[in-house]
Length: 81
Image 1 (cartoon, rainbow, N blue to C red):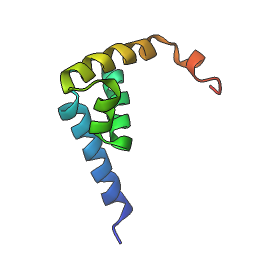
Image 2 (cartoon, rainbow, N blue to C red):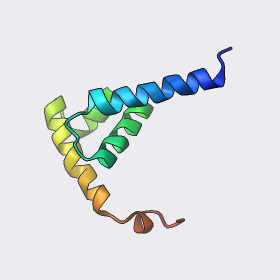
Image 3 (cartoon, rainbow, N blue to C red):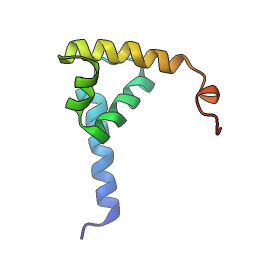
Image 4 (cartoon, rainbow, N blue to C red):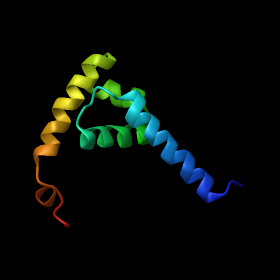
């Protein structure tokens, strides 16, 4: 059985790779975090498919969509806050 700290370290490393290497064209850091988390959960290919057929088209669509999400105040987006 693997030790929990090692598994956590691997997960953090994978998130870092997703954020810095897979979606560098997403320039807003908060947006890139959202995309990296979505890719961590579903795989980068799945995230790209949702937003477009090719990586360039997908990143442009993701950036536009996520900028809309970023513009909403966090307090109004989370009714439990």
